[in-house]
Length: 207
Ligand code: GRF
Image (cartoon, rainbow, N blue to C red; front, side):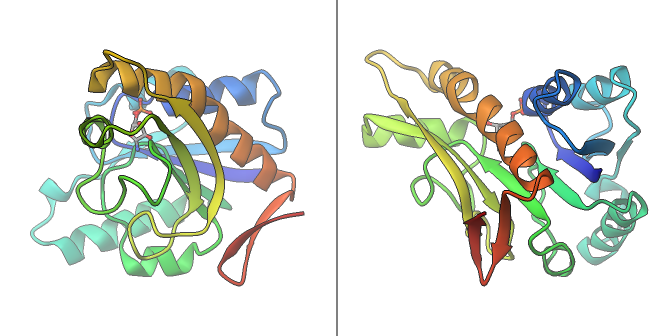
């Protein structure tokens, strides 16, 4: 069984999709060993505890500087001995040391078709605001391996979603979640857990 840890910052609907998929047997060969948030109060921690998954938080606010936080953060993650780390709406920049340590063993979901609307500053609703401002007719979601550069790692899977007339960022965000994110992320975890996807020579390879 692959030991999977999920990192979250917000409401945790992607986390819930993962929990549900494990419980429904749609993700196999996975044990959800822990959830970590950078925020003590988020709903995600409640979702984890309700599912019987150990949940912890570590906030940059509790440390004098970024290096001390990064150290404490990495220590908390290492303590779970994860085989795979899933960033499911996690808004903290991954320290380079952590990206290196978990290379090929850490994935992220991003709510656009990378390389559009990604990188520094593109998170949450901002992604959808920018997609609407640009007037794209198709957007979507991307799951990728995490490397040091934000949203730059090898792409594992993408799913397209149509933009519709009259969309607001909120409406588009919801459609992207329902039609892409909540499907794509559990699928990618199942693929990795069952050896169907690996990172090799800087690319996501399907076996
Ligand atoms: C999702 O849109 C995810 O792609 C992005 O942040 C959002 C998190 O939503 N990175 P939730 O916390 O899973 O509900």
